[in-house]
Amino acid sequence: MKPIITLAGLVLAVASAFAQAEPIVIKFSHVVAEDTPKGKGALLFKRLAEERLPGQVSVEVYPNSSLYGDADELEALREDKVQLLAPSLAKFEQYTKQVQVFDLPFLFDDIDAVNRFQKRAKGRQLLRSMETHNITGLAYWHNGMKQLSATRPLHRPADAAGLSFRIQPSAVLQAQFDAVGANSQKLPFAQVYSALKAGSVQGAENPWSNIYSKNMHQVQPYITETNHGVLDYMLVTNTRFWMSMPHKVRFELEAIIDEVTYMVNQEAEQLNQADRERIRQAGTSQIIALSDEERQAWREKMRPVWQQFEPVIGADIIKAAEHVNRRSR
Image (cartoon, rainbow, N blue to C red; front, top):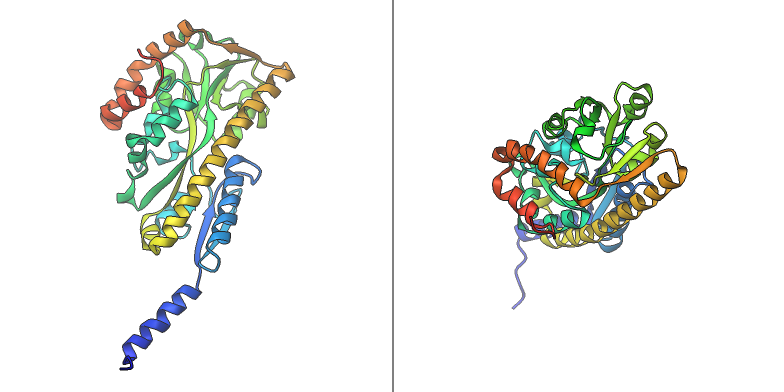
């Protein structure tokens, strides 16, 4: 007996075929250059997605704020005008306070501890913490651990007293410098070098790659290797868009993101180590290594900051973050 083809069935078949013929367009906007770890990650995602999902996915990459800038990219994502972003974690404060855990000073021992936390349950939980705002986190991308640069050597917390440090807009970072009797000034990243050169601020906190790429080592005679916090990005998407994709497509894209994340984080670490060596060889800044005792003094001075933000971050999250450090305290 031959199957009966109804008009409704034919319409559905044609509609399905048409839907498969139209690739899903993913606009990936970011604010950095293409030769940075984040920029290279965006291009690798595009290549792998289009190679492995030919005709099903089309990725458009917009670097250097060419589509959206810092000020408006997250709202554009929520409105589905762009589908992938990778803002720094400090940019999410208005949507969730929990990601402030990464700004807590001297909480993590090193980048390996950060990796362990991000891979475990509490770290993964933070990726889902903004879904009520139509933002879903897909991965953490590293920029690097932060170092303190200044116009005088910083060995102990008291050494920072009275200095003015540039910060990103973050209540945690402001409290961090308040704790050591220093001042803080919120400035766009593009203005940091000129502010340091002019002396309107006397210090800053940045990964080695930021210090070297913006020539901050030429106007900061001392850099203390504190590794006191992490400057990371979160790869995010529009929740409704991501969940509307066919399961097989979404599953493949998530596998690709895992590959790209590994590459981005490896490259970021290699770049930071290479730029640290370039700064050392330049000889314009003295690199100060903290002893275990000195580092512990900084950590104890900063513990009140952890306690101050515990109500909004969550005691369970802070405890989980501290637990990933290899040394017991």
